[in-house]
Length: 160
Image (cartoon, rainbow, N blue to C red; front, side, top):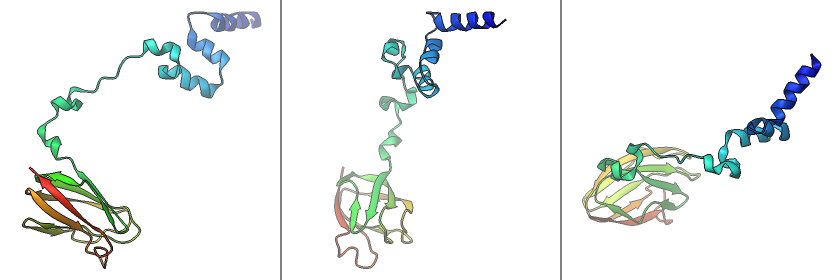
């Protein structure tokens, strides 16, 4: 019986058509799980890979026009507002996050618009703010304490 088991094990390991079993015999278990299940990790098997094609809804040419109004990322840190230098006219959604240590807020003034967050953001907090912007120049600033005077202000151009 023992001889039969040894013969069977030898045949499994020596069989040239079964690369995975050869990998199991030659590699440690941690290496085997990566190499055997991920063909990209083994250059000899690169010809066997199939390209990944995104679903048609994820291809840019087939996306709806609403995707043009993606959220604008705004980071508030100590005495700095990080955001794009220019924006497109229309409804904009700002994703405002406090990445600093102190409390901050976010205000917009210009071209007939005057808005700010209802409450200050503590460290790690975030909120979204939707505003319709016409072409022109706007000032974005932090109205907390003396943050604006310390440089926490940006002038942004909104274009057509």
